[in-house]
Length: 137
Length: 154
Image (tube, chains in turn blue, green):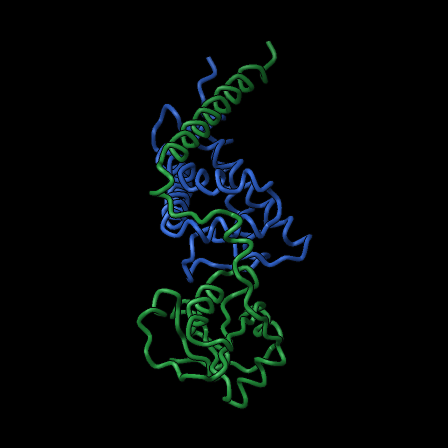
């Protein structure tokens, strides 16, 4: 079960990161439209998130860093949930470009929030299982 | 011994690893030469030359009267699933090689929503040869939300 969850998370992250790298301007435009980050941080964040997603996706299957990768996953998806929730509150309809400009993976705010919350819970649950299985001594 | 202590220790260990992953990926991202990351600067994106905006009423009228060319700039699979009646599909990737555009006719371009960049890209390209270009900013999202008639290709 834990392995399947990690597989889903890793596939999603690597796909999302790869597609963002293919069309980096769309993601930068999306970040800009959310109006949440100061201008100075927009470009570094837009370059950083796709690389972070790919690294995390790969490291989910590297045993020594698995726990850290699950923690990153949890916070990353929690961050996306906050972004979606925030844009719902503001009433803006950003095209999140979470998967680049792939037409099959684009969604509206509400579905995006549900999707992000699902991944947050999946990551947190998998991290929790990993913590429960840890040898504390 | 408090049973929470060892668990907290593991959480702290994982958080340290997470920080290391975040920092390393940040270093990788910033070490890629800018020329290899084709980002426009933010100013360029937020202050792109604004094209005139078409209202919902304008595009509705254009769809019915056919006096204006309507361009759906979304990727083809979406266009096929549903588009504004009488709209033709030209994505930013295809616009350079598209030859069948009626000359001199007003054009309204739309894509998904107010923040999708594709209608702006297509509009800017067409503006070189046609001054009568408008963007329907709210795009497909509003059209669909209003329950207006749509057309499918398949």
